[in-house]
Length: 296
Image (cartoon, rainbow, N blue to C red; front, side, top):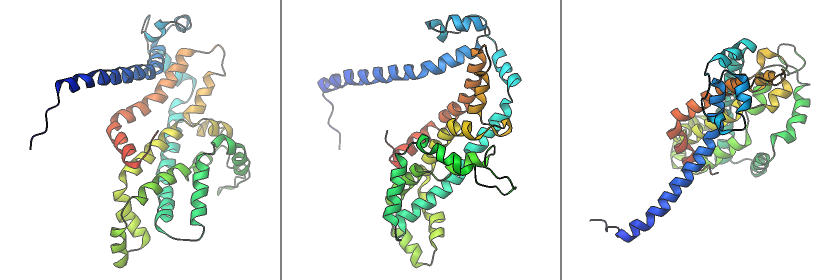
């Protein structure tokens, strides 16, 4: 059965709308790229005086003058960048890995099991989503400052675990998993339950394979969030050995005069891994966000 042909007048009516949509998206994309272009171009300029002179002009977005990688070499000479990078990768990936397990298990219990206080717990999790971290940062700092650790230390400060453990359980991640699990039919699980399968086995062999999109969504969002964490590491870390990239960048602002070429080179090396990961997994990221119901 052939589809009815679109009338020429309707086709011409759609073209201005499509052109307007493409034009608007192009303008938004250009404005989004301006900071990145400015950062990359400034990081490559060797003359600090030229950077300051062109800071408020359009030339700041153009690779004018002498270009060099000296600013990147200065970063490695002034701070232990490789150590900071390892710390950030370790912290972010550990939070994501353990968070996927813990948050999905909590969400599965809320979505599939019946127990006393279930609705109250769900309400508390939803309420925690709207509470900003800044509101609980100081009480959390007082708590971790008094918690002992297994190695005999009487405080969690200046350690990896103080940057990891408080963020493994995440209310927003639990809610995403919970919403996704509710949409999975219970028929398969009921058949497995009749066959004698345990709840954990059903979670591992049925729910997890069917929930790859939401696992991908939570992993990407949590990695981006904790890769850029600044406030909490600044409050709890003084030892450079466990300092992440975001706090390590503060060393460039504490020295006068500020070398903006070095600062932009540091920022470029912090940003590039995130951009590369997003470009490599862009299709998977978009599909996972769409299928898990994340709207924004």
